[in-house]
Image (cartoon, rainbow, N blue to C red; front, side, top):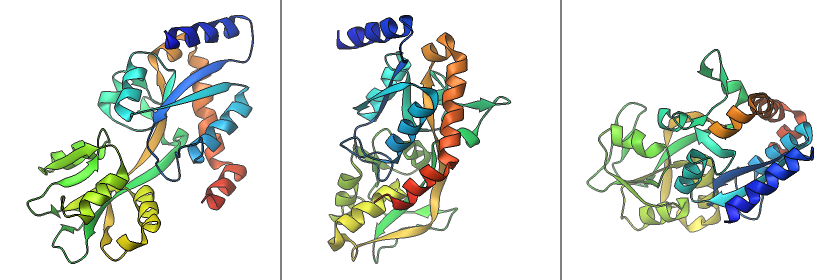
Length: 251
């Protein structure tokens, strides 16, 4: 009923010619520096600038990531962020495209995954071969790195949505390695200085990929021109001096 009431409100406002209102969802766990509890994070800075450029109002609801994607699939929200590309997601939602290909120029950000191990262990990654012991590799549930690891024949522990919990498993030797988004993992290691002597990051990154704002099928069908303006604004904001300064100053 809450969703129905909000959707009715949005329709009523748009019908009356008021400022358009869009509902987006995002994961409910911290992803430093992009998404933080309390409405902080560079993603929120970016969307605030998009609102100003397009005279929109964007309401963001934090949900478990799998639920957020399901909400997008069911057209209960207009968009979801931040999402790397996958054919599975493209089957039920829209990425920004140019000439039939995903348009990296209109990405929200680029993020990498690194492999973290306990110092002194034999876990190995050279950019081609990934070798671990008998324990699984830890990763966050629902994140795109999970199928990437599984495709390499690795056993994956995805029993938690929290990056901090994955690193705790590593410290407690319940997993052999952790595959996590780089900046969030490094932030957590700084937060727990006692971990710095126990954990090390292996180079090169496992993967580095662009992340996008996904828009719903319903929104693109209803107003494809608006969808294109939103994606255009995302790309323009990302490269703007004001946003670049926010990135440089963000703690």
